[in-house]
Length: 469
Image 1 (cartoon, rainbow, N blue to C red):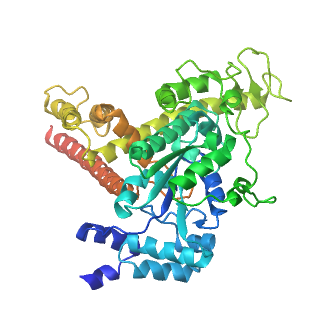
Image 2 (cartoon, rainbow, N blue to C red):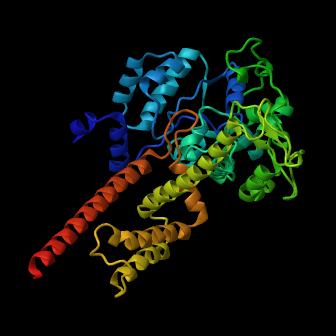
């Protein structure tokens, strides 16, 4: 048994070992930094790494279920790919690998405290706490409105895939970004009553840097050192340079009033709960609906300026017709993206034990009652078309099932099924595997059923034609 397990890829081996035996908690006390992407985790990483006792390197992803490739991990930390692969093969569990990685990072750096900054750590705080009971967690939170402005410009954020190809200035993109922020902030704050958890606001970090850093180091039981306030005059990474306040409150000029309403609809109460606003009466400074063009264009038109035109483009020119075509195409893609998203949520929810029983029962009752009913609007004996009404009922059952899933769980499933995050690591690989298996099974059953029904109808028609005089 042990020999068979040892021959497996490290991911499969660690997964099997988690099921076969209880993972022994580690006595190590790492510093775990997480937060929504574009919230300031990289800034905090560079600041802490300047401390003579703290090593906080690039994103390692070692706490995630799917770790970066050995080649990428080696390049980021100065190891060789062969070393990383040997540590993975020698580690029976993920905890063992993390301990090895941590120890060697500290030996190489000559420091005594290891910190890991990976934004997606925020979604694994619960698991990490069970593996490392002495760990300290730092959750970096930034105003969700500013995060939306940053995310839709971030190249690592695969918004085109998430939204089905919608423009980065479209309402679908704003909705995707704010949902992304909500899910990560909400999941991370589940530990807020734990004494080993600390929330750090990005705005406080850039506006009151020293006082915030003193509070962080006191939380980590690390002595204060003024070198954390220094910065590289010529940094390769802008986050390692001087701290600027220009990114705080950028939503006031970057968001239009319609975009602000989308953010308010989804995250208004959370922003109040986080004390970013006292109520829901906030609005952008402009108060206008800016019509933004596609990235790279020079169009910006306000609702109070209906005659404004893109620079160098006259009304009725082919360029404006093309823009209108792109807007229509984007709208169609938005509907397609929502349909695909709900279908994926349906497949994931069918294997999720947290879905309430009444949702399953209602979704199963609708097609069952229709199939048993004596009324058939489109007779099934008509090839292909005869099953159109059955397909419509099935789609309605899927839509009903998705709507009956609790909103919080539905948002969590949608977030788990999103594209890779900042570090390129796919979110929820175990659930994605289940979804792909279920999707392939449903696809094959659908194709097989359609072929069988079509050929059956043709055979019946042929038999009738031969028997009739």
